[in-house]
Every structure is written in structure tokens, then in C-alpha cells.
Amino acid sequence: MRCACLLWLIAGCGFSSSAGAGPAEDPGGPGGSMGSGGPGGPGGGSGSASQCDASNPSPLLCVAFGGAPVVQDLVAQAHELLEHAGILPIANIALPITGFVVQTAATFSRASQVRFKERPDLDVDDLTIDLWMAPQQAPAQNGSWMLDNNTEYEAVYDDDFTVRCGVGGASVNSRATVDPGAWHHVACTYGKVDHQLRVYVDGDLSGCQTASAIPHGAKDGVAIGASFDPKRGPLQSFQQNFVGSLGHLHVYGTELAPDQICRAAGRIGCSMSCSGGSGGEGGDRPR
Image (cartoon, rainbow, N blue to C red; front, top):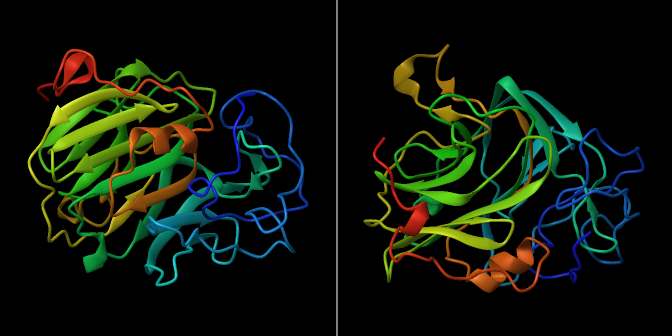
């Protein structure tokens, strides 16, 4: 188990539960449950949903699973949940932080449908997508979407087992690959000042690519665990489904720094450079 401190970033949305451990192993490494959450932190208290971390930067979207309804956005001005079907919440997931147990993960299938309504605050100039993933099988051809704000930004488990981050028409793939069967922390960031799109796997900066500004004006909301495009028709709007577990998912309207991503992954001393210049080995690929 990696060593880590209880940090403001990872102390996001969560639930505590007295139920037994869920079917997934601990995110970040093997091991059993770490017990109940510490005082005042996510996972502590009586079992009701805790609030997202209100410190800077505040999340725009903080997705939790296992309450009523089974999927919730826990930010103060929550985004409306449009659809939620075909997901199984996982109880008592222990992230690699001592004493920090949260119930913010769920298992997704090829039939899962989760989507939050579009709102102007989701049109961002700077971006961070921050989540934990545990794929159960190989990704679909052309990738399995973990998060999709159609035409604006996405995070994808790509068909070569890498993580792909995209904004507009640009994308970057990680040098690191992710094998099914274990939890991994992944993040996508974009900064409007340097126009750099970055992908992180388990805290390490794993690819960079120059990209144009994030487009605004999407109308389809944010889908979790699949891509969403209403032009495909009502029975085919959700496609490229991710099969496995996703959890502790945040979207920020700011670009988190590499050291912040490293700490969110429960690590210290992560790689913070993109070798090979813009794009490097994890640069954009023709698709």
C-alpha cells in the first residue's frame, strides 16, 4: 500500500457504510479495508453523504454512488441527474489513504446509462478530470469512455490499454498502460495559458499534447461510463461503454498542478515531465 496523507484534494465526495467490502480490491494497491473514515473526513459520521471539499479548487462535478438516488452530484449547486441505469454501487472502497473509506464507486456494464444535465458552468477554459478506474475487461474497439461531455472533453480507456484525454478535436494518450483487474488513478488536465493537454496515470505525468481552446456550447450534458450522442437515436445514444468500476470522480474548472495530481493518487515523488517534448511518446495520434 502506498503511503499518503489525508489531503484536501482527495477528501472529496463520499459515504461511509457498515456494509462489507465490495467486490473490487482497494484502489491503488492490494489490501483489506482500512476501517471507517477519520473524524470530519469523508467516510466518517453516520453514513449520510458528506459534502465535496469546498477548498480551492472547488469541483464543478463530484459524483457519488450508493445514496438515494443511487447516483448523486454532491456539489452545492448539484447538476440534475437525467439518467441512471445499470450500475451497481460498491460499498466501503478504501483509497490508499490511512483511515479513509468512501462509498463513491460503482460497477458499470455495457448497458449502463448515467448522465448529468448540461449547465453553463461545465463550459470551462481550464480543466481537470480526476477519477479512479478498475476495468474488468479489455476496452472496446476505439475505446471505452469513462467520462464524456460531447464535443468538449472526455476521458477514455483506449483500445491499446492506454488512457486517452481529449478536448475538442485534440487528444493525448498515456505512455503507461492499464491492465484490467486493478484500481488506477487517472487524470486529464488542460490549461488555457500554455494550451497543454496532459494525461496522468497513477500520479505520473504520462503524455502531453498542444491543443486549441476547449470549445463551449455543448448541450448533451456529462455522461459517465459511456459516450453520449443524441444524434445516434434514443436507443443508441449511449455507446462505447466502460465495463468495470469507476469512482471518486471529480471535474474541476481549473488545471491542477502535477504535484496535486500526484497527491490525489496517494503518492509522492511522481514523474512530472513529458519526455520527448510536446506529445512525446504519449502524443496525439491520428484516429
